[in-house]
Image 1 (cartoon, rainbow, N blue to C red):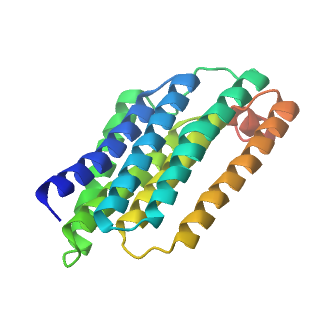
Image 2 (cartoon, rainbow, N blue to C red):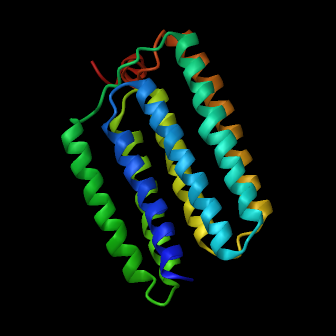
Length: 220
């Protein structure tokens, strides 16, 4: 692999981590969904570049799935769900944005240290892709645990899955059928989550998880 190819792959994977930080910073639902669409678009570019570098045509299918489903269909569907349910469009955080960003920086540093130490014999591109992928996964988890709105937690889950796709495409030899089955599993999970959002909104008149806790009597 030439130095230019390595640099571009590195740039795209790093951009995915940057987009995860942009999602952490957002405090409005529509802005969060727009950044998630950008996140998925960068993932599609990264996977397409991996297809070119690895001479693996089947990865172009994965890139196309990421572009169509994750960057277009899912964000548009979530926009419509928010509008249809009349969900409050400001995101409530468990901790401040500043502390959340600092926690995110710590998780990225942890990912780099762990992955680079446990994969000393692996290909340089695969090692760095796995480190970036673990960072995206952990930042997705951070979004899920620091947001009180169910829609923003769904976005955190979807961004986490983007990290798994980045890790899978960085590892050479991943069969196409596995990638397609994972993509459709996520789509089915999104549909189920959408149905639950409608049911939660109908039952509790809110999708704020604090409202659910109050209903259960766990918080006063």
